[in-house]
Amino acid sequence: MKNIFKEVVGGFYSLTVGMGITLREFFRKPVTVHYPRESLKMPERYRSHLIFTSDENGASTCIACNLCVKACPTDCIIVEGEKKEGEKRKSVTKYDLDFTRCSLCGACVEVCPTDAIVFSKRYNLAATDRQQFHIIDLCKDLEERNKKKAR
Amino acid sequence: MELHPVQSTGPQETFVLNLGPQHPATHGVLRVKLTMDGEFIKDAVIVAGYVHREHEKMGENRPWDQFLPNTGRIDYLSAMMYTHAYVGAIERACGIEVPPRAEYVRVITSELNRISSHLVWWGAYLLDLGGMTPLLYAFDDREKILDLLEALTGARLTYCYYRVGGLAEDLNEGFVEGTRDFVKEFRPRLKMFRRLVSENIIFRKRVEGIGIIDAEMCRKYGATGPMIRGAGIPYDVRRAEPYSVYPELDFEIPVDPAADSMSRYKVRMEEMEQSLRIIEQCLDRLPDGPVMAKVPRVLKPPEGDFCYATEAARGRFEVRIVSTGKPIAHRVRLRTPCFGNLSLFEEAARGMMLADGIAMMGSLDLVIPDIDR
Image (cartoon, rainbow over all chains, first blue to last red):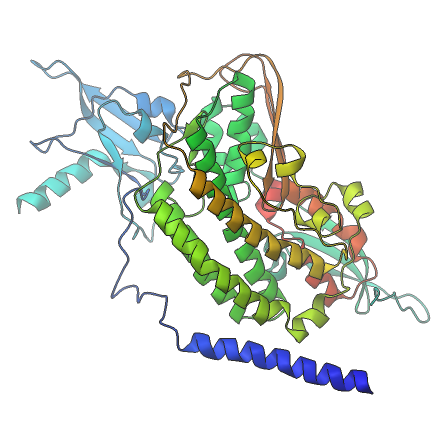
C-alpha cells in the first residue's frame, strides 16, 4: 500500500517536472526562421553546384586542362576547349556538369590550377523535371551572370 | 522485471506480420518478418539489403582518394568517424605522419558529430515511444552543431572533410569560439534532457527491464559500441585500440551493467557528456601548424593488408584495405557496427511483445544504409 502511494506521488512529481520544462520552453525565443520571407545566409564554404569564376573582363579562367574531369569520382564533368590564335593557353568552350551524379566532394575545386571553378551558394534548387539537372552549362551560366551585371 | 514469457493456450495459431520495409519504427527501409503469436513475437527474420549500394565494390574500382565521398554516405549520421577510419587505413599503409593540429581537429569534429548523432537517436527513439516534444529539443541543439560543421566543411551531413594526410581546409574563423559556446550551452541542456526524459516515470516504465541483451549475446553477434557498454563491458575502440590523439585525452567510458534498453539509453546520454569533455580538452590543447602532411599526388600504398578501426557513434567501424601497390585498391572491406547490432534482434526479440520489441529495436540505434552499405 505504501509502495503504491509512493509510486503515485513520485510519478506525478516526475510529470510536473516535465510539464514545467515544457512551459519554460514555451516562452523561449523561437529558433526557426520563416523561410520564404526570411532566409539564412549561407556560410562561406557552403557547397552547392559548381560555377565559373571570372577575370576582370568577365571571361572564365578555365584552361580546359581536364584535371577536374580526372579527379571526379563520378565522372560527371565534360570539358572541351580550344586554342585561340595569339593565346598561350587553351580556353574553355564547353563545361557541362551532370548535377544528378555530382556528390559535391570538392575534388575538382581542390585540383583546379587556375581556380576557375568554385562552389556556388544556390540552395534553392528545385525543378519539375530531372532533365534540368542532367546538364548544368557553366559557360552559359557565366554569360547570364555577366549580362545581369551589365544591366 | 523480467521478459514476458510466451503465453500459449490451446492449439498454436500464428500469423506473419511484416514490419517494414516502409515502417517509421525501422528508421529506413528495413524489413522484419515477424511470426506472431497474438501480441507476442514468436520468431523474427530480418530481411536487409534494400539500400545496398555496393560501397565496397565502389572502393575497388576507383583511385584511393576518390572513395572519400562514399565514406560519408555509409552511416550518414556519423560521417566523420567513417572518413577517419578510411583515411587512417591509407595513412597507416603509406606511413604518412599526420600533423598534430589536423589530428586534434579530427577529434573535435568527430566528437561533435557523435553528439549530433546521439541527439538524432535520442529524439527518434523517444518519438518511437510516443514522445513528440523531445525530438524538437534535440534538433534545436543538433542544429547548432550542424551549423558549426557546415561553416567548417560546407556540408551538413556528408562532410568529406578529412583527406589522406590531414584535412581539406584549416579551421574557419569563429569555429573555436562557436564550439566553446556550444559546449557551454549544451551542458545545461543535457541536464534538462535528463530531467525531462530520463527521470520521467512513463519513459522509465516503458524501457526499464525491457530488451535484455547481455554481454554473451553481444559477443555472439559482434555487437559493439553503446550496445556492449550497455551490457557492462567497457569496450571502446578509443581505449582498446587507441588511435589519433585519444591516448592523450582524459575521458571515461560509460558502462551500465543492467543490459536493458534503459542502460543503453544511459550509456549514450553519458557519452555525450564525455564527448563534451573531450572537445574542451582538445580546444585547450589545439596546436598551431599545418593541417596537411606531404602526400604524393597519386596514392600507391605498398603491397599488403591494413586495418584501421574507429569508434563510430554506433560502435566499432573498421576498414580493411588490401593493396597490391597499384593506384586502385584490390579490396576495401567495411566492417560496420549496425550489422552486428541488428543481427541479435532475431534472438533478443523472441518472446517479447511487439510494442516492447519496437522499444528494444529503437535502443539499437540502427542506421539502415550502414547495415546494407
